[in-house]
Image (cartoon, rainbow, N blue to C red):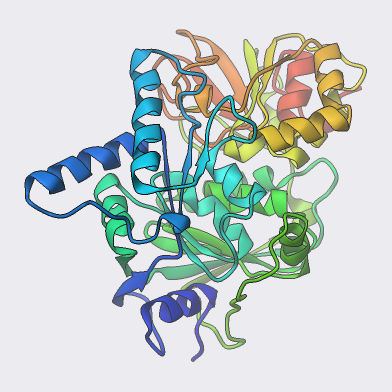
Length: 425
């Protein structure tokens, strides 16, 4: 029996000829990331190690480490301002050159920068101090989030242990209809398997429907594998992957693909034409419903942002709906990186948004994690392109967040109620 793509990446990174699910292996890491929330946590671990007499003078390879300022930028308070200073001192001390600083050109959400800047490549093992590190698996890499202690260990040693995960395979047949996006597909999957349905497993996506998907839509799928409890999400590299990376100046990498007789612990099959605009109701990403069944839900706010829902393709989808329209509720659009913001300006999307009455904000995780820049008040109801809607996730513990695709969120902003984009007249 052959190995699937995840097993092949991990076998290569661990120097073993073969690996199987449940094997515990020590793996060489190719890239590591911290941001303005995980970074200070890692710095505290370093301080504790120093107190124990462990040498923390040098990182394993500063050129393989990169840093994002994204969760609390622009600084929300004195603590978040101080954390940015801590990060700057850290990158200076250790000679980390890839530090994407807020207010100095290109910066953005860490999971967006990883692909926008081609910081992670096919076949690599990539770890980040954030649970949505899974996102970058869409490029054909093994991408997983780790806690502060594990990240500190990686920064000093360049390796970490993993238990080889089982792989669930999700096959999509046929091209998604015009009104359906990757967000609808992944919400349908999470509704089917539950928020722990892929616990410590890899979710792999394939089939003709994935081949038809542009890279930015694929990234939505792997991003939200986190909401099913997955260790990682992955899509085998193909021509779309190569073209996407080449447009960002990356051509030198070693693709890994699974064997034709690779084993999966379970295969799920979906027909694209049967999918429809889908919404996750409070308080769980698995609490799904067709958008049409929620058309009486009154909204206070529409939020279009985050690593999940503010990529260029997402903004293009929103512009298609908002063009020549006016929003009925408070609507915010925060592009996921400055590079995306610039392209949105160039393509005239920003003007469409502003003409529709939308407020455009700077790239930030902000309201997605209930940090700042648009958090919800008690009893407020929001429809959002983000990835989580647990109690208090976007603000007050008694606020409500409905998760949906950029198309559904834009249509809902125009109506002021949850709206299937097909029903806009």
